[in-house]
Image (tube, rainbow, N blue to C red):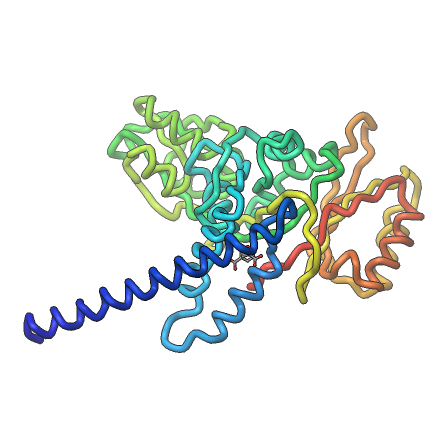
Length: 357
Ligand SMILES: C=C(O[C@@H]1C=C(C(=O)O)C=C[C@H]1O)C(=O)O
């Protein structure tokens, strides 16, 4: 190919970029118009977003639908932000997996408030410091994130789960030091410690493991302390300018965390919704069986069940259940009504589009 050919092709790319830019500007201006029609109503409409993205992925011919989803996910994120900027609370500091999950769920055109734990994420929304929040719920290696479920037990009743997302968790060992032999202590959140327990005992036997409130906070400590390291995500390590001594140290090849998007309930439902509930039953034989029986009779597939100690009632528990179905579907509504008559307390945390695998 001659220099002349290259020049011609690049000129054509420039003119296509310009057309794309003008089209984007038209899309943004239409979104602003939609924002005016919405007035004070919520800007974020997850069902419409699913419809837009699915339609485009179906239309993709020569580009990978994954790329279409990523690119248009960001376009939509920006189109939301011009209607009304959204503040989203998540566990920080920046570089945490919650930070990555917030971007994956809502795109990058959001303002983030970093807090210390799931309870603070929920209270940021109740106190109107944020419109939405992102919290970890369960990990494929370590299981349920108890702090999130416990926070929901006492949270403001107006908060709902409005979405879910799954993030592959790839852990790195990051440090100011250059080799394993210089490391005397390792900082991380207890969950990631559990996700690479075997790797740690094989590669850093005898080092002190010190728990922190998040992986990105661990990266901050590793930055300021000699002979220390953090187990964190690549983003946190890079933001802090740490050396990555080893990547992919998690024990199981598939290590992913499911996150909930929390906010105020949205209207409408997708074709494949999931519902999260919490309930507690009296301490008598058969009460849990009777509580769950209506879900079984309605043929609902449970995707999570977890008990947690009931605050103030030693050795009594409340239960979290996720199942496939929407709380407004006739058979689900009836099952929940029967369940409600058999339990001490039942709260529907929300119905939201199920992640596609
Ligand atoms: C533009 C809208 O607002 C938001 C942005 C969307 C988009 O950019 O396509 C879709 C849904 C909403 O979350 C809309 O509601 O149509």
